[in-house]
Amino acid sequence: MAAPVLHIGNKNYSSWSMRPWLALKWGGVPFEEHIIPLGGEGYGRSEIKEVRAVSPSGRVPALHVGDAVIHESIAICEWAAEKTPSLWPADPIVRAQARAVAAEMHAGFFAIRRDMSCNVRRRLDREPDWPADTRTDLERLFELWGGLRARFGGDGQFLFGPRSIADAMFAPVATRLRTYAAKTPQVAQSYCAAIFADAAFQDWERAAEAEPWTIEQTEALYR
Ligand SMILES: N[C@@H](CCC(=O)N[C@@H](CS)C(=O)NCC(=O)O)C(=O)O
Image (cartoon, rainbow, N blue to C red):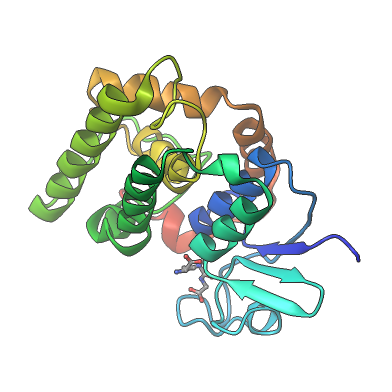
């Protein structure tokens, strides 16, 4: 069978695409990627024609495996873990906790997602003055990362020690903290540094930096 194809958005802007892309890379699962530049006609309404053609939700990422289509970032990460179970922690209870925080990221942190739009290559000089709900999200994020590192980090550098899908889910958030110059506690800083030092993350980042496309509404934030 031909290699699965992961349809993704621009690497600079598509945080949801980064997550399964990292999980597949970390899991050593072979795949091809196909980038659909986001922005333009239909963007923000799940109505980009090229996305609709490959994804039933009108959103990327979507993984094509033979004639099956798997959409939703977390489902693609789970598919990667079917191939490479070590993408989740081995202990069933710890694994459930890793799934819980991955689900929390997938279903929550709305204010961070609203106010800190993913823009991998951008760097603000000064942190914006966040509304209360964004500050609450940031506090929860730092509490969550700090708690997991203290309880499960052990000798590893990631949330549950070695890299897991939980880290794939939070990796784009690390870039958002960097983009928007967010004041970050020490434990979160060293966690972000571990993400930024990861070889697969760096491949993604280099590609994001080299992309020719810009999404003006994201670039205009806090200008
Ligand atoms: N819940 C979806 C979210 C996917 C999503 O929102 N993707 C964005 C790109 S990061 C998208 O396709 N946007 C197209 C649009 O807004 O029209 C997932 O986890 O995969």
